[in-house]
Length: 216
Image (tube, rainbow, N blue to C red; front, side):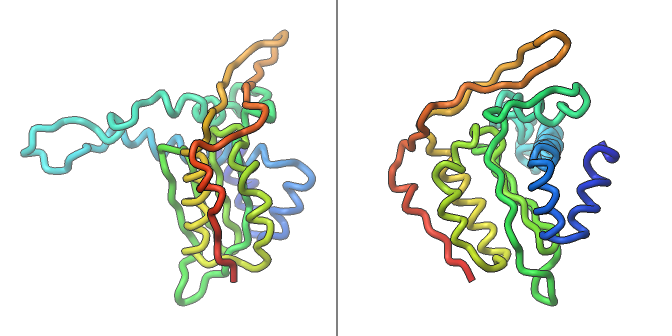
């Protein structure tokens, strides 16, 4: 995993937003997206070891993971292990991913930030002036509502603004009227990860479309 993900992505991030952009333009977002899926998976697998209540006197032995179950992680697990199974991931099986400019670290801002939501299965990872924000299993549904909106951002975003982006994308994901369904199939010896997505994504709550972000 280090050779596939950590080493090349570290080199990209060290080159800043410009190098990351050049890589994506040439190679697409597959590597970065699967890397984020792997980080999300490893983070939440830990929930099956951590107690839901830290006070052992309560007698409640449940783990944090019992609050949402492993089913919600199934597709993310398939994406995360695709580098090992050499699976082909079709476009619909990928989620929404934004790569945003972040305000550079100084005496006020640390160069790293991480946050995620296990309901919408969304993740934020900021490394100096590059920030990755993704919804991992929406079949790109969030991008249909949010991409045009976020393209109006013309300056690096502050840490709190990037968290707002994560919150807004998560809110849209949670309000998708129809979620994609995922499947695997074989064509000869090739394993293919596919998805059935709605022809036209819709929201349960139309007010979600009114989300705004204050850019610097």
